Length: 618
Image (cartoon, rainbow, N blue to C red; front, side):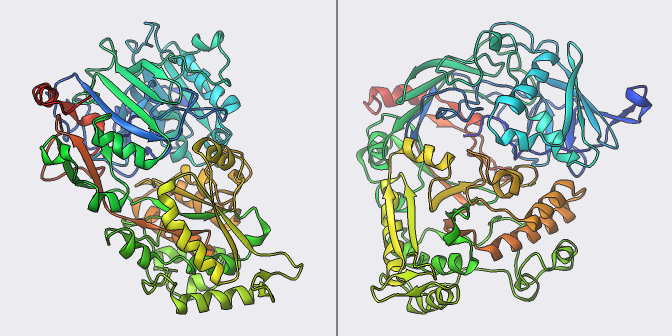
């Protein structure tokens, strides 16, 4: 479920009407929306997105689950663990759709103005926009939001806003952002349009940097219904939501209540679903999808199973090395450790053959690097000669070798790994352990908070031990894992990133050098590379999609040569199970973003009554 904007939403210059007489008499583009690389699909008078059901009924409840715990409803600060979907309270200036990954349309902002130089942008806000308490959403609130997130929010916001000169309220409902001339201007527009707007008045009597379970003052479609700390959160749709009839919202936000139940482990959560404790579940464990869905509620027709295609990049999931630790400084060591992960055995023995090995950071997309560099990629790579491995130019892009599905490990892969470790100076001692010249033992600890992942990590550990590496799978609870990840206290951690269809500023947080030492940042590997930073800048400033794809492929190629992760697996579909009382738009041509987005689903009261009468639900 995606109910808020993030740094992966995308905007930029778009054709539209022209106006003059604004600051410095620049020629200014005025439009109802923004598109990165072309015309907008929807005109200024569009009624709704094509993929929604504009007549979808409102009502009912949908419930799902989350792993671990929470102690806050404040998602923008480093302190505490914020609850699932806790950005749902907030509107932004603009919002996007599922069928146009490069575009945003007005939400709080009715229109936008900007010069062809993109040095600034003005958002003309709707006077009718209001917070939950009935107070208007003003330009001062937007300025307050920007300054507060920049100065008091998670440290990663400083990276997000580094190309901003500032923000100013031109009048009550007109706000202007100004950007640095040499910054990533296309991406700066994104960050401005996607701000989750906070109430300045609300925080005059509250400390923004403190955790809270109080319902925050937002202007969004949902507010807080109830909360049980660490156990569940229920959000309630607002009947008085000011923007419910705007074209970008028609056919969406259909559930009266959205409930998230928390569980400490995967098995307990699955058993609770089978018993009807919650009603919607995406299944991530192939073993369960293949063998576990044979319970009575399914046999009786109460639960429905579906596999939905997803046209987005598959996600960047893997075991990530912490390069802040000297023992992982040599890429040969990292490559050797990766060779000890036998995906083919895991897929055959644990996953029922349902997955495909990931090899790219943009798997399942046309931004994935393949073979030798293309002419387009070389335009971005040639200036980096000497900063990146020569193999980037002379060899096909790195792809994990296919292993024999042997529980004892693929001997060929392990021999290659052993040779790499020898070359890197980690020799096997008389006790069978590998040590460097200083006598330090090569050890690897996997940080894990999921019992279901033990069966994947433990065979990996066994193979590492065969190589003479002192390996350990350390299981901790979810709260401890969250805190250790924020402080980078791990050797290897499992992480997945949903990569954008139009990458940009968010890459600074995942791969950028500036984020490496920012506590709580998304740069879990601690990667610091001038070459990577340069390619990210090229991606941010690309002014057409072909250049963007070439720059992303070049970055993919360089990242894969660094062996900063051991890639895991993916499937280009979503396996979902739900009690048969929900419906969604059915289409032969689903939008690229998929039709699994729950904001476009709705509740069928007649089906729900039937299930309740039959005792299907608690």
